[in-house]
Length: 301
Image (tube, rainbow, N blue to C red; front, side, top):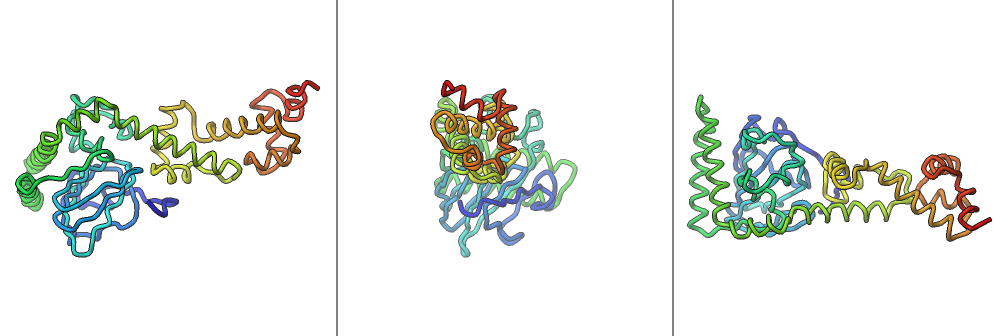
């Protein structure tokens, strides 16, 4: 997914006419053509025009009769062809999961049996929800009912829309139950998080010498939002991004001090510190002694 250095995260108010539930086709609003994220759930339904979807770190086929289930804060883009057609549904977490109080960044950790309606969203990066014509006709009928109710909102309309939405998700869960249960049993979402962490670590390693190394750039390289990366680092490592980068820089500095005769100014530079004095202060604070003393003691003299 190209050009990930500055990626927009959208709220419902920016891409929807209502704050709870919104359904539209391509004529109602121009499709987004660059990678982006949003704070709400989204389902896209391809009515015609084969393409692909980029989601997280994966590229999945997105032909006609396919549904895409996109979690909040998940980087994605679907480049719809000019002659294609689609329906898009945006909805808030509260609209779908009234019974569940959960940080949106922890949705992948909810047990399958506690919130089965989350299953397609959790495993979208691993599975393609392509339906045959008969099943897809049932989905399009539900879409028609949703659009009719949404256009004339009344007191019970939100409940009706929620029911149709759950029917849509339920039909997909029923058809793909074996695959979804297998992915849940294998903890596929954890593999996805490990892959994301590996991308972050690779980016840090490749850019460790850059004093301007930032959380935003590392998150973009790993197909994550900065907020989600912060959350993921705390969950997986117990550290902030700055703490993690400093720990890696200190580890690299100790290696150079023990195994090379490079001057301290050069070690400071290749470890990502703007100047030797700042490097020495941070090294003393992290290791209890200045770098020159550390080198002498490690070499026994």
